[in-house]
Length: 204
Image 1 (cartoon, rainbow, N blue to C red):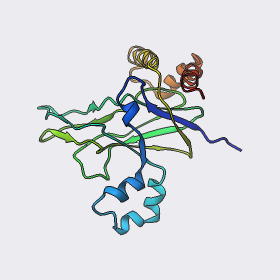
Image 2: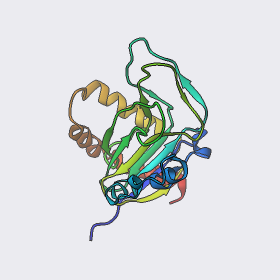
Image 3: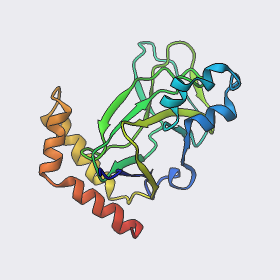
């Protein structure tokens, strides 16, 4: 029987997100906040099947992004928020397209057992400045299989690991596939290093 991956999620110990942030089930979030929460759409079995295991990450504070004369996608709300798994599982990050907002973002997916980076919201500002309120959804997260979620605090040393990984990617892997990145990550046994740091810091 295949074991369910454990996904360790949380923020850096030095980040305000470590105290504030958590994830929320997407269906629960929509039922509490969406103006059309009684719509038959939200009762549709196909929608429920897709949404039931999705998560929401929310903004810890009010802030705004100014309009850019040449709109481009910009990462914002550097959350210092991470997901890492002890077994193979793909994470997909979505813009909060079911919420009433002006966050026009992009979708991204990677295997969180074979690569580590913070999860940041992304948007392009096309018209007026983008204003985000505290507790507003900025990102949805989903997985390609059932997982066990375990909230932790990431030690500050994780930043050194991710900085090295991003430098390696930018210098050696630009334009190459994720498969190549995964291979380098696993050959260097970085997955074991990260898991040991997580478990040691959190007494797991």
